Length: 311
Image (cartoon, rainbow, N blue to C red):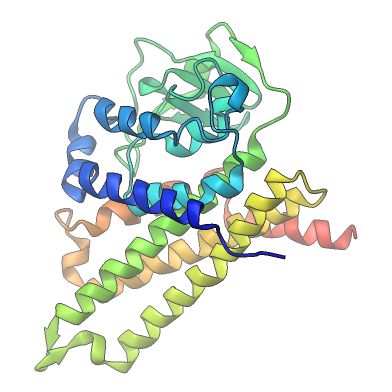
């Protein structure tokens, strides 16, 4: 059995990474935080043209007809870049919503009180129901200023456009986990680089044993979480009976790893990491926004435990 990603999948990942490196550097994310509309149309069009948004749309409908296994590395790249646009929601729900393959999609569980990004979206999915994006609403602030919140009640006041065949919760929890892995990887990368450059007592702080241990622990947490996320991608793609268990394991591990990476990054950066001017905030705040989304780690661990007890 082949467990590795194919050359084509890795090449697609690298192409998306290159695109985002050019169009979504940290200063572009900061610009999005302060803009009236945080989502950049040109960057979105480039992702659409590349085929990222239509990746899971059937070929008969103009997409690439691929699966979550092909998408998972691209979701990591969105997290790695702190991409303001809703790549995860849009790519995973593209086969099921009007305008799929190019539409900006916001989504939230049926019991959520707010929907992130609904004011800038084309369509909004709440539970299994698809609504038009609300108009004339004032987004509320969020810890992640690229993910502005709209009250769910303001969305569901609209006339439904469609009803999905199945609740998208598993897909959204998986996509959030994949994005968190990408965010965590970037946090570890920038912190390692900082530890190499920051001097204390005449040497880089990365040479101190305590700093090494913290960074190694964060790196290991991410590397253990990633295969669980890849397993969840395969389970979704092949409609495995244990898909709920696999998704919950992925979301719990990815959430824990990302929160650990954020804590270590902040600790190693020290006082500079607390300043709003530090780019560290771009990824830390994405962690704090996504970690509780679609079920926090504790909720998903309970679901894994329940699934194991039922075996």
